[in-house]
Image (cartoon, rainbow, N blue to C red; front, side, top):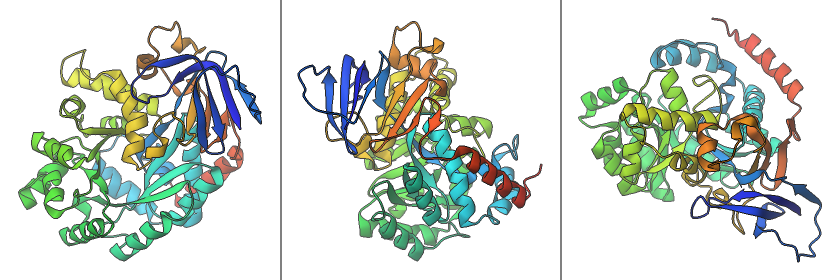
Length: 425
């Protein structure tokens, strides 16, 4: 067992109250105690970690990314989405191998862990290699199918769904497809059939750009959200990545079906896609999650930056400095993202929950003096504040060191991959 003691604990279990002089016990992969300092315990521990007044809290969960796209980080910047995707990314993706995915994903895992992220919701290809990289690292991954007119198939998606939901405790799999503009209506109908068969949600890129949304309206006389509802894709919930160009009727559909709006502010800014109406989503009670999008389009995998951008962009969009309370976004990046990904057992710090935890170094200058810790995490916090990241009861990152990754070797292998792909401006 591992004991954390002499610290502050933000459980995010029914609110934002912080336990002072708190402690938590980790028994295997689960939390067995959380509360005030337990001075009467005779329990023996394999390790006792003195928090020294620092903050223990639930880890961040990255609710939308394409981890192995580290190959394209800063390769084709300052380009609009469609040009970036079709002229730069798709041609290089065609050259990727399963072994490439393994290595490129581990670079992303290192960035996630050093930034306090314990799990990612990954839409990409070569799931066996992604799953193996995740298990070997000790990282938690929810994979989502990226089916479209050019890659994967309905039969393969169903095979993956059954295989990877019974693969390893760190791995799970969700039904999904790339987007309306890359996926024929006939395919979307078949995906809806699978969702009905397994009584499960579906996830996709949706309403990311104005052009995409208008094109869908022109073709189907419906927004992407309205189309998905009509086809039955949201009958069991799911999530819509980006959700930038959504209207009130779209948000009513999200609310009705429990669909998560997965916000990707950094990527949407960089690609000039727009600003999602997050405050309107909050006002209407829409489920919220936060993701970084992939390292080829963001280019960082930093939830602190995502939280900050999400909040401040709403203030500009609504011309109201009180718009978008920071605590709502902190909750979305932790609890909301976990639930969006189907990780309800990893959403907060409570007895019986999985031990996916982080330690925030409150002694960093950006965290001092202490007035309001939760809001400060969003407005002033940074990945430099991450002291420790635990996944499934195992410490994978601590004081700048990775416990399961040979990071220099991974960097070397990744560089050889991009040189082989011919990543040149």
